[in-house]
Image (tube, rainbow, N blue to C red; front, top):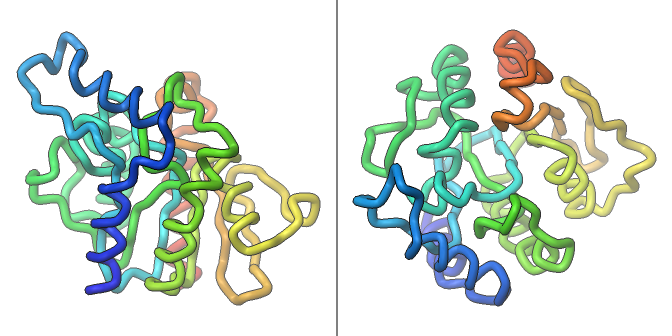
Length: 219
């Protein structure tokens, strides 16, 4: 617990990437019209959830007007609107919605984090920025020792392979793909629950539910 709290403090205080610092703070000042009366978080977003979790969900990076506004992953944006109802159906979340850090959401046996901690312009962190962020993810994995890693999207998947020093050519990326890592963890792949994927039908509720069913089976 103390290790996670210390890591959270370090993540929130990070200012290592000038481009990201400038962008996240500018977004927090200018704001989106719908959120003019909101006080934006405007800092790196740490992981959250059950500190004794066996499952670690790894996303891409905070949304400019979602996590960068609320301060908690997948909270207050379209991805979260798709994610948390699914986690609630699967029994991993106590409620189907996530709107703010103080909304009462609790996760069971799950920790949600990301490979990038700051909202990037056009939702695209650079490889250098992700390299700078990677030690945070490595320490989270070391502290939590998850049994199952769920990667949302190719960038998160590729980054986890890099964390574990594994070669991409040996691990296929496709929705529902399951890999047993040499270190013993399971790596399960899901398309990212972004609006781009959910509104086009690339990722359906049924496809997403199958990921959480498989997660239960692995435990």
